Figure 1 (cartoon, one colour):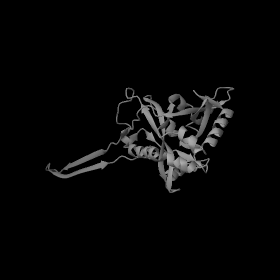
Figure 2 (cartoon, one colour):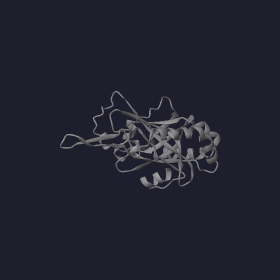
Figure 3 (tube, one colour):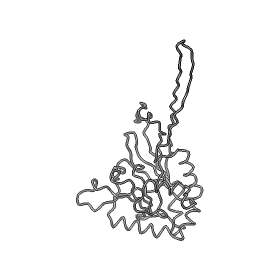
Figure 4 (cartoon, helix red, strand yellow):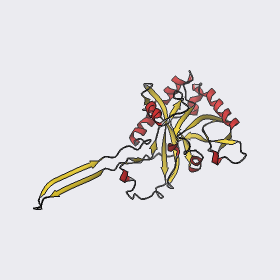
Length: 260
């Protein structure tokens, strides 16, 4: 696991804060398909019980060539005794394999037929119980549109926002988006996206997280979870960029309001 001390973390963030104002360097660091991979080991380092959100810092590691990274704090129980390494990082690389967006929408249909005492049909009713969205998940179609919006406009957005220090330096991310709960879930893929903010009336960057599943290990559908009649998918995207949204105590409602 890639780990950092407080000093190394501060140096990496400081270098990003310099580079994020230089468009000529930025366009060589961030591409339309830059992605970050969170293994199960990495997800286990995140404190998703004590915190609803985690702040993921942008950083640059100087290892001969500039390496773009996300830096996250390690939860207390995973810090080795006496260790100064209290942060870990994941590296940004061009997407190397296909992203599979999976979404299950199951409708419950109830059919009631009533016979009278003469055994004649007097009533035939059919009702459909439509599924509801399971926040913080979003539909695959919406996520793909936001990813493609980033692909089509990220260079223009970085050019417009780098000169006056409006380029993001971190993201607040729901810890639920960084959780792998099933043995079949192998890793999380994170990519940049672009969505409209109703508060700013403009497009702002976000992150889309896609759970990569090993289909051979995926449990069979027993109907238990689907009895809740929710939309099941492997996608989440309630990440909030800082700037412009830099509250230190983001709440679910503030993130949703800011980013919708």
